[in-house]
Length: 144
Image 1 (cartoon, one colour):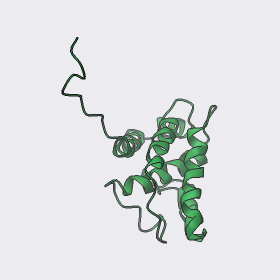
Image 2: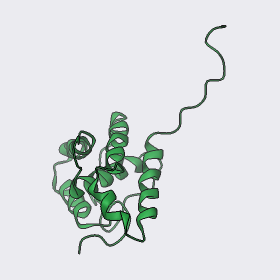
Image 3: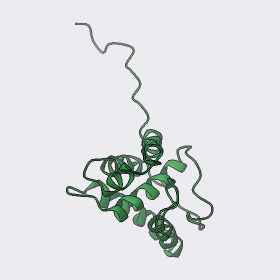
């Protein structure tokens, strides 16, 4: 079927990734998420669609632990996931940056689609959950 909506698990690749997580031993699930995020974050050339879709799904799993939307009950993982370590949030931010970059097949795929703007907003929302804005410093550390 391919892609049927704009959500992180609304495509065959992400749904298959959720199935892979369910099939993986409990102790391997974090490693699988980390591997998918790292593959996208470390992409120096063109990020292919399937790696991008897996990265968005993995980022959504981490964002859910930061108050984001729960994962899709139909196509997302059905088995329990571990509490992900904090360093995965920054890795997810790096992966989402690559997903949203010009060298991403996902960006190309959503460029002409009528739902493309909503998809990009969804990716930005995930990113914002994972990397909250830095609060401004109120006091000077020293006098000039």
